[in-house]
Image 1 (cartoon, one colour):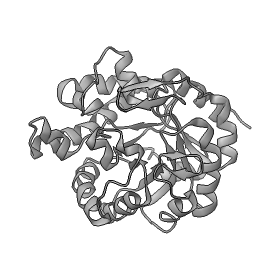
Image 2 (cartoon, rainbow, N blue to C red):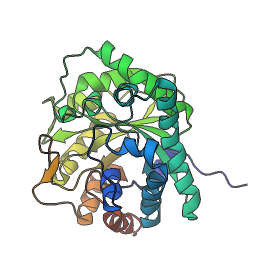
Image 3 (tube, helix red, strand yellow):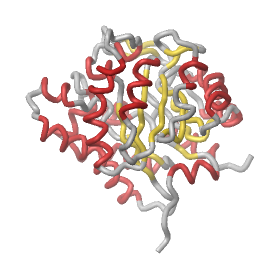
Length: 304
């Protein structure tokens, strides 16, 4: 029997293609995500739609599916009248849905599942994940994140995606929360220019993960494509770890209007410069769909 490599082993051999935005793929299939649970709502109401969204990305060339658990929290589900046992079951289902999509994809290459854990601000559903600085201590943030990370880790993903982190306090809390779970993690910040969304220098932010044994990659996500190259180079230099990058389309999210504004600037042509800067896991976030992921896969798998 052939044993598939771990994601960390794959990164040692070359670049790996991540998927694109879950929400835009679900919306393009006709699903309304206009509530506080966002794509996590479909785990309860239409789980097959989540599996189909993952499948579209695997068939487009993605090697890694990021689960629909970004906004899946005990607190968020409780506001919808969903108790802790059911909420834990839905978080587990997010991993199982991605695994099922990998099985259905029927491709010869290894496929991996990354269990998404969004920031505290995602639970608030008010855009504060793009600001950070919630007025909570690191200890309080760790107590928020640890229970759902325990559930996600028990579900058996290949990696935990600690993503869209806006500031160093939350990063420190997440790094503490993943200790001892037995599942590797990556840590990605949402950035603006050379700083986190909360304004801290990226050197300081990435340094937090440099010695974290659980962390197999560091980088950025849900940022503008033009911010990736500098951030990737900084992450590689500061940590010595593989770099993960998956920016959004370049459009801007208006939290008040709950709509995207501006124009898309994401193109697969940028991938080569990201790789030169140290990126090894490369994909897209919000508003980046299967066609763009197919183009990224084409670049990644073309010999230099």
